[in-house]
Length: 124
Image 1 (cartoon, rainbow, N blue to C red):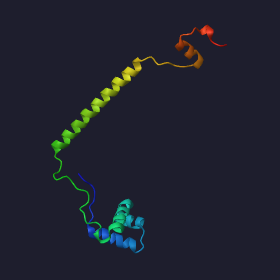
Image 2: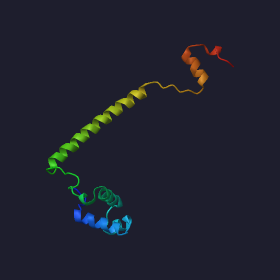
Image 3: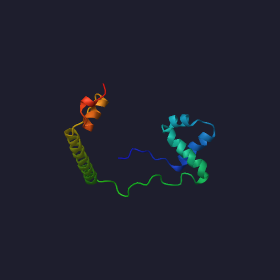
Image 4: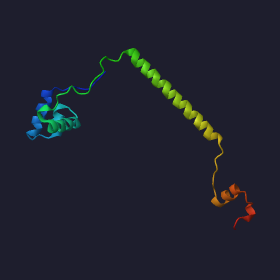
């Protein structure tokens, strides 16, 4: 269900004339209950294209509405994708937990252990 409101070309032109007459975008947006950013976009189109502005039908919509079966299939596909991602992350976490992790309390001691030199050779 699309909750977006559609505005006619004439309506948009009337809004542009109100703004050109000196009213603020915020004031007009509040009065008409329209997002000010929407009016700013209309204004940019109005300035760039003049009388040719607002000629399109807006964003194209799908030719046919999505059926309930199509929606269910899309959601099932998404569930499958997320399940595979979760499984992959679980395996990666398990492998990470299996690996011994070196905890360095003293850098010098850890370096000596790793190098294989006896600790007695360490500097005091």
